[in-house]
Length: 367
Image (cartoon, rainbow, N blue to C red; front, side):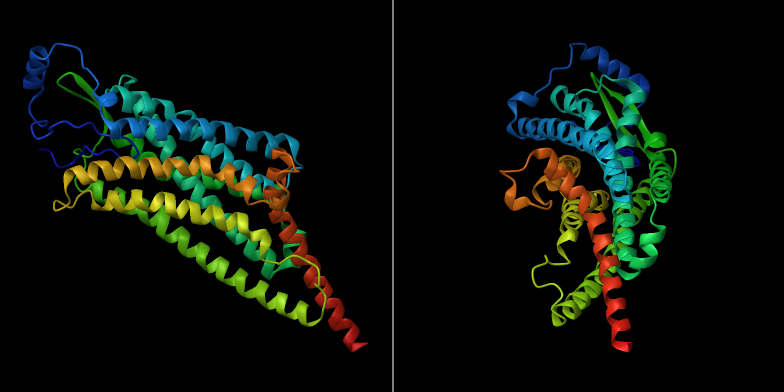
């Protein structure tokens, strides 16, 4: 078997075929195809595991399209354009795009045959990786933005602009597209007897499989989360210190916790981590010959589904983690999403006012 052909497909699904003889010549493959000239019959609907994958991925598609569509409508059309709405609008667009193209993968699961051609084979994988990279990059930028707003509130109040945020979003999308180019290069359509497969073929470049897998793990997971942890450590330390100082001065007897505006962002980051970690783990184990192939197959299938589920969970977090959650039965769906998206702007303003109050206090002491 050609070990440079990735049969357990990144962000896609392999079929339960014996690929040991796949590297045979085209002539022998055509002969086999003639011998199996009958039309390919899917066995998905007779297998509980396959049906489960169909149901899970169909739910991801429906919830993702509807949820992110609502967020795009609210953040893009109903709310005032701010730095914070710019971040969340970009996240929603990224999630919406990957959910829109997901029916092709759902059809592939059900039919167990790729009938959509080479262009869509490459495009679906490319969009999925763009979503992965753009999501984590935006979470990093939002974390840095929050950190700057807390540590340097006066500077942030004067220099945080929608134009700058929009430029950062464009750069995030460009970098994401560049890092996703391998999906366009190595994704290919292969014919095996009566079945057509959309898979990654790394045979043209030696060791490219390992290099791409590790680069995605490093740049799409490890480094971004390290930066996010640093930012949140700084934010937590500064806000706890500010809270302690204000409490001692009896300035915030009835105010809410200064950490509360960060809970939506924290939920988004934790969700991304939980959803994408299993996928990266199985991708890195894919080249290990000691791992059972059936375990690898099912692990990648459900790891991929969990990774894609991240795209439909964000709108749910906006609703149920936003401000006024306790009043959710009295508030409309739209107002709750607006509250969740607007938390970041309130954090920036509260940090600025806190710093201003602190400066006023020091001045009055000198007087």
